[in-house]
Image (cartoon, rainbow, N blue to C red; front, side, top):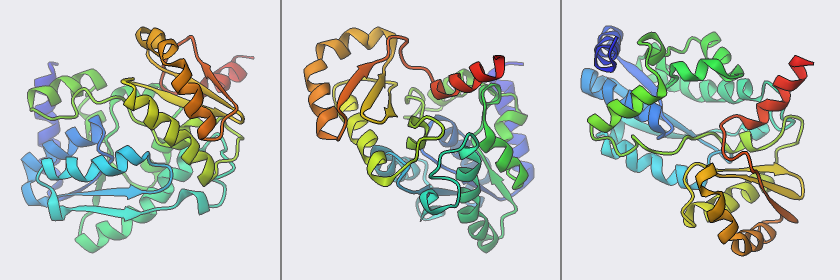
Length: 273
């Protein structure tokens, strides 16, 4: 089935729901989903963004602007959440993402009820199903729908369709909350989140695309695309200076390059053994 045919299936599924609330981060997937839902349902498409310390500052600033580009305006609700106060989250267990999704739905559910909406949508795509994703399982348990999975849409297809639709996010780097920078079992604090966020901001300013600053105590393990490793070496003095300014003692460059979910690699290795 072509991407266009899958888009048609997605539109039909959304139309059948009548009125929806999209959990909206401003990333590639949720922006595409919100755009298609707005096209199909018009003013019956609403969006909610849960903002907390685990959301990168640049994303907090961008999500409102992207919502306005989609024409959501007063149908986009930006609400405060606080995963760090949720029992079990800050300890960073292997099912941390389940706690995060539970917090999201504790924010989204009351809003959906107030708006008279029964369908809360996630921007999950088929590629998300192959990694360790306890958050998806928690969202499903809470009754969330994943219409892009139902339409069999992959990440590449969503990017391609987003480009054809003129969405500014079509080539946006892959997102993940700042908590994903911490190895499982490492306590997550507000101050450590700021360390990671600050150094990532600097890397964005230096021109890096997909990137992660993984927190390892005194060490910031930096992942950038392999084709940008030389750029990182070129800017090594600025990166080291910034890392120290944000509270790290060392800045290490990961020679494997950027890869989403790299902290799950230790879990996979444990399972193999």
